[in-house]
Image 1 (cartoon, rainbow, N blue to C red):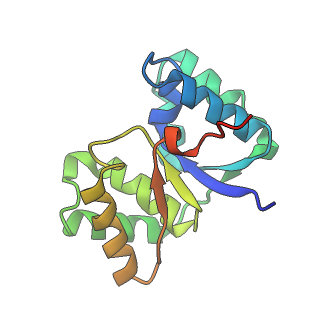
Image 2: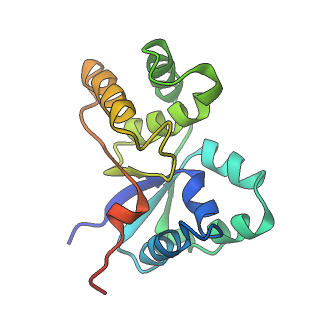
Length: 154
């Protein structure tokens, strides 16, 4: 079975400590540790986690290095992020959200996983991101909440 390469934005790590999101966030982190998924980690996520509470930092630190693929800096990410902003999918105040989508897209992730229902996991935003991706020949990428991704069978 193919190990899916998934990009988690910071909301998933923080979700481990939110009553509403903890169950699925923790489950997804455990599935990464078990090798079901390979975590793609961008500079943007690392920077956000470094500014997060210590407990959130420990969640990322607790994932074994062999379960993580660190994404190298790529100028294409900033270009794609700018395209999302120019298309007004999100405004300048949400540029980091656009950067998360761009990082995952440029890295050819299998999916992006987020609890951000305002700027990422929202049907209008998803269609906007995918439209720009198609125009720039990046193709499709799945955008889901952890609830849609975790394995409920085990």
